[in-house]
Length: 489
Image 1 (cartoon, rainbow, N blue to C red):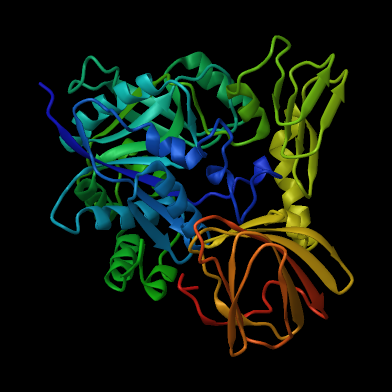
Image 2 (image 1 turned 90 degrees about the vertical axis):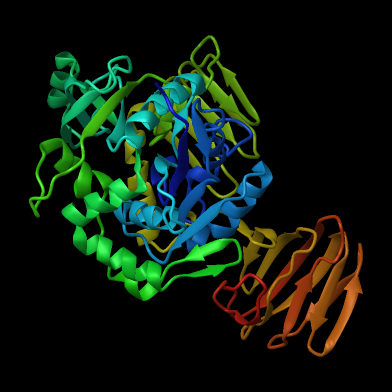
């Protein structure tokens, strides 16, 4: 007999996705991008839990760092799914992130089943996903730790594996097995042996378990992480849409993954403290899953033409096969090529063989070593008030296109090294410049002298679009002194 289970979706949104450069970058990673349609991967993750049988869904809980907080809040708002956004002061891997989520989930005396999902995965068969999650929820409600293993079809070296043990007697119809072993990413010959054995599944990174079960497991396996998270949680506060934990406490927290901290020990039935661990169960899942960790993985899950090509944006392909071509703006034309990845953005173009896409991260590492912005940030930068696009730059000048959403307000600020010219293209701007405040409308402009306190606001009901021309001896984004900021930056 099944019962209705309270499920708390927990979405871990901490990855940087560097192997999907130049679309994914450290300051705006792949989970925030619409790689599979109109929704971002994060939004698709929120949507796919809607309609799970025998479940009552709590609002989503997203764990992320400060860098992404406003973008994530906006993406949840667009879905009409406001939830809890739990901010980590620094990255400490997935075990502390899940521990904070469990502490948040039980704060009002509840003990929901946590459905733990990375924000950057793709699942194409939602019905199959929901069926196994519904089965997993029943097991997790009974105290088991449940993970979902992907039935492998190739000897993949980029994934960890889970070895299946004996069938789990508590769920004979789900295909669930006891977890026998968690293994790290293998070499090719080992992966081939796993595939041939038929008892190994890819580790999906998806988990279900009660919040109290996770906290008890952490107490047994990693009490140091639990103590640090409890300290940080006790130092926390509510900041508008966000839940902040104590920075001092969390920076002292050791870094560890869910797999290393708990899952491997549950599978091996070992624990440093000698405490009894919960039962670990793995359920096979065939639901069109991919972690889209690199461009070849994205090519595999996107719709293709008769020649195996994937194209998005302004793309022309002639006599091409098995090629992925994505354009954000400019025309991409490919002739007579096969097995290529071509990705165009405003400030970078990637051309790679599909077999070498794992090495894109090496390009990102080189860009960072050279101090180049293309390795970490897009030309178009999102802010809580809107966005700006750096359209041109040269010796002592920089030009930006700025869009401020209705009601958006930039901070009251000052620059030591640059002056600014503002030209309104559309909408209405409220400008504070020194001790003056005034309105500007379309085709009007103003000048902000170096060292003058100023602010830009959009008091209207439509977006404010303007051009900003900066001039001065230093034009870096860190030349800013904030006096007031409605977004708490």
